[in-house]
Length: 235
Image (tube, rainbow, N blue to C red; front, side, top):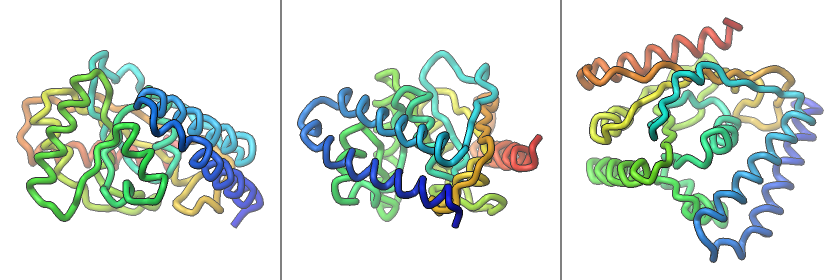
């Protein structure tokens, strides 16, 4: 544990507790209003990370982002990318495991902002529902963020990529943009171990549409993992 980590952890949990309580009446309002409030919470949390934790960040490869709605398949090492992408992509819909929506109070907000929850025990029916929800959200002009590994991973660790991301890409007809990062070096799974440094999130070129499912899956994993290693080594 670090002094910065302890101070930031206390700030983050206090901020979140206050926001969850103060925002409760707004659950009766529209999704758009709650999304704006959620982004204010994200911005306040990131401000604390910068000031208290000494963590900076930047984005690379922004020229690879399509003008139309798209699916972003992002490496997942930290809470940072959830907060930052929510602001940077202007309230995208995150695909997340259904268990998160069952967290008291916090889960209500995840549902209200239009997150796409996946019941990982439901098999093929869960995949069909995820595809339908993704098409609906993309059709409204919003972007989709999916973490192909399904959970946060430690820097350097390798977790199996889930094939659902390729099903979304093939069946939705919208671009699939890979993204790599090194956020776990500075804000790891344990919030108490935050340390100063610069997070880099790199957007990579959209995957081609003329590949088979297996080739797409292999290419997606390869470009994300290779670029993640480069970023963690400062390249």
